Length: 106
Image (cartoon, rainbow, N blue to C red; front, side):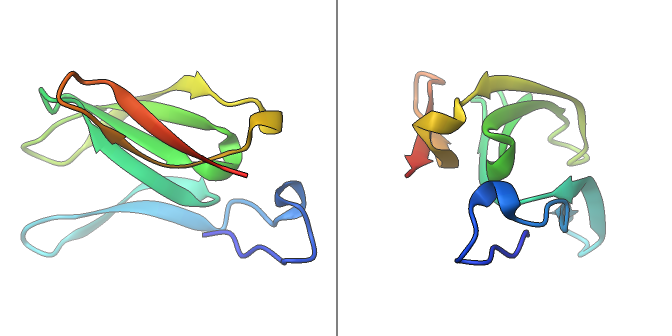
């Protein structure tokens, strides 16, 4: 995760310091996404075929194809772009109607 100096803006934070990992039942650890700034949200569609992910300083929500049997993710694409003037995506959940709810900081 990016370490933000409280005296600097989010745009000045040194980026790409983190990774997103998958921890399997057998305790095997796989690095799935590199160059992560601030991981701040995971949610899955009700059919478990799509995983949603927030890396806050990208100002968006990405979707991945998700394989529930292997934990593998593929086909990353941005599905929501948040204008920087609106704030920073800071977590999310999905409801029973598969509607994605995204918390916005600041």
